[in-house]
Amino acid sequence: MGMFFLGLVIGILAGGAAGFFGARAYMKKYFEDNPPVNEDMIRTMMMQMGQKPSQKKLNQMMNQMKASQKKSK
Image 1 (cartoon, rainbow, N blue to C red):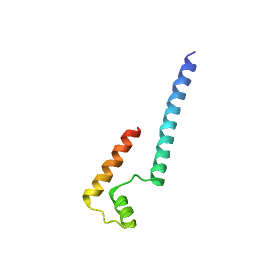
Image 2: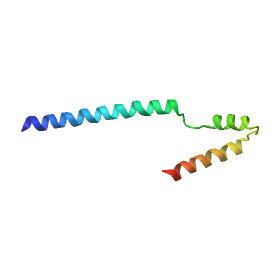
Image 3: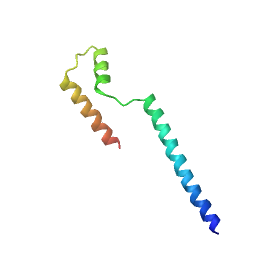
């Protein structure tokens, strides 16, 4: 009976550790493949579309993106 609980506890700890490190590796790879958008990316995108971005316009777009991310959660 005691060995059963010891095995159960060890199994739970091992599963938790494996899950943590697996999720950590997945998130690292995800953020390498899909980096979060920053001001430089928006500035480059606007310049490619032929617009000259001002700091005010960049701030507005960043705020809109942050607001839309909060809505979707």
